[in-house]
Image (cartoon, rainbow, N blue to C red; front, side, top):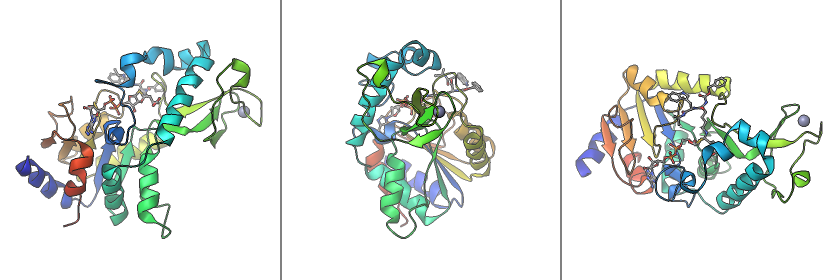
Length: 255
Ligand code: BJW
Ligand code: ZN
């Protein structure tokens, strides 16, 4: 393990442009449930009932109930040492954070690590949106929203102030395209990266899982931190099987 950590540090510390791709595993030690694996959200909930546009059309109350519950869970969570180590590296320059997570913990860590100096630096690119934003199903307007969701009936669900249509969580469900601008920036970063760190993702969901493959194809070594092997492990120059919060502070320290 020590040898792997040393090798990975060498690969990452020399990078002038480091792409950090994260998934649900980076937030697991903060108490945010992952999707797949033991205790994951998909163990007790079917993705097709909750995380597709069809599910929302069929039963918006059920979908909002689930997202309202997840908002409450995540609101009680704090960034862990992995989020903080990533934020410090991004603030030091030369690293870009691209996350599949919708929990906002990378952003919180970046703002807290930056302090009052420059709170807009080191912010992540959020590929799959945010639990704390809503989007109007009528006029498409987006806004920040941290309110409690009353999903007791369809009449109490959140509605657009401008056009009155139903609001939906501003997240990317299965079968929906990612925001073209966000996706374009993420693939630009992957092509430009001279190293790539992949943390806590099962590597099953595309196009996010294609980013390390793109970086690797352009010559960047990939370092993976995950508790288990994933389809991305065979692309990785180094795979570290350990909890992200335990290894990232050392892996990314400036020393
Ligand atoms: C730890 C740890 C610790 C635990 N330390 N590690 C190519 C091939 C096959 C299929 C497709 C393809 N291209 C597209 C598709 C279809 C589909 C897809 O990928 N399906 C596959 C699942 C088969 N993709 C899509 O539908 C995407 N859209 C799209 O492609 O659109 C095309 C289009 C264009 C134009 C018009 C229309 C369409 C959209 C995908 C959206 C995914 N959405 C979700 C929900 C987001 C909102 C929400 O949160 O509610 O995103 S699904 C869910 O999976 C969520 C996650 O971001 C995503 C990835 O999960 P992640 O982060 O990897 O988490 P887990 O739980 O899977 O893994 C956790 C990992 O951490 C594990 O490996 C653990 O071991 C590890 N771990 N603790 C380190 N402490
Ligand atoms: Zn509207």
